[in-house]
Image (tube, helix red, strand yellow):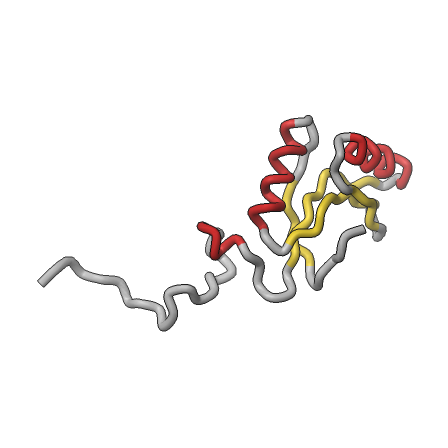
Amino acid sequence: PSRPSHTAAPSPRASQPPAAAPSGPAAAVSAAGTWYRVQVGAFRQQQNAAQVAQRIKEQGYPAFVSTGPLFRVQAGAFQDRTRAEKLKRKLASQGFDATVVAVSPNPGSR
């Protein structure tokens, strides 16, 4: 007959294993409860974080500072990783060292 085939999954659109890299529109939508933000910095001093957040806001993007051991500057709250990646690219093109981070549950928008 024809070429050998791989073992098929029970459902062609089943969730990807955690180690698999997302690909295509179906994989871009988050798993239940997972949201994405774009992080552009983590600072020991709140004043430094506030200055970076202000620079991002001046570029027209939503930004906020989350507290914890470090003050993290983050932007956006997306269920769709593709949209977070798009914002990351925009911020990176403006000189920000941006990375997409997964958060759970829904972080809301601040």
